[in-house]
Image (cartoon, rainbow, N blue to C red):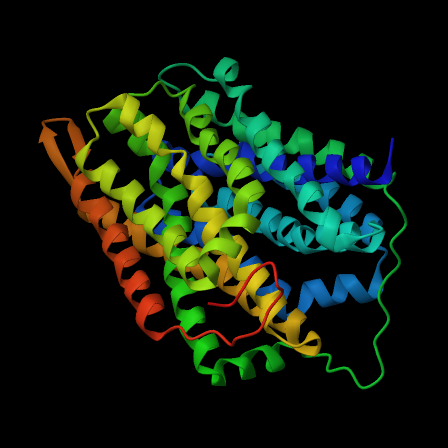
Length: 408
């Protein structure tokens, strides 16, 4: 097995752990009777872990442990935490186990990238293909739930999302020990151990500040999608509970295609227009959710826009940072935007959308309630349009970058 194939399999397992539970986390907490504020606290654990990763855990891991051993230990302990989540039906133990899992898992997202970059002969050429393994893993892990869940899945069935994630986590823990040795990074003389301060300083640049704000808005929308989508598909559209994750995985399949054409699109459209298309994908998808909920084929088909939303905005942001910033600040800039996407955006979405769902849930009978999904989905639609206007009128990227991706 080639080194690139081994790293590809690492990414398959890395994202499969996440993809096993992410689409159904919030619906499952609703089944357990958690209040909206309790769901928000659980959901924000991911953002807290990302925040600590920026300020502490990622640097601690990079400087003190070989990357593959850190991966092995984190995923072994993370698997135990996931089993704790699966076994917990009351809020306090559920929250404690999920927070522990988040603190263990989130740092491995950057560590797995570090392993890939350190062990690829040509990272610029090969990393995209290796990272595609993560998308494949997310899709593959969705399909077993066709058999593990019933059409009207009960909490006892849905808890399998965490059991499956734990099994994959244990497999990845063992597999990590077979990965190429990636020693800890020693401090460079004169380097700032608190590199995040450099990243914050980048906000003085107007184009960075605008992109920072737009990325925040879009990351709230993106994270909100995972809060709302599964319950919408099962409760409003009428898709069977054991098929909803498969339907959602169509977005990841589309992501593979859009990532393959992203380079050509950047050459054709440039930075700004490509990002605008990505954000408009959110507006289009949520508009369809709001006004065409009675058409199952349309709702299923519009999941394909997820690939456009992710690749044309988030992937483009990462590429833009790498192309537009000097080498000595690229790492800090990437950390700044990771902090937004995985951290602040996640926390904001975890509090905003459960609260909105609670406010828009109305009694439809003596013992039945329904969510006003049309009003709910118009909120992220409006947010996306605001982000588009900000980007269109105020984003002025520097005229620099690789020839294959002009900054226009």
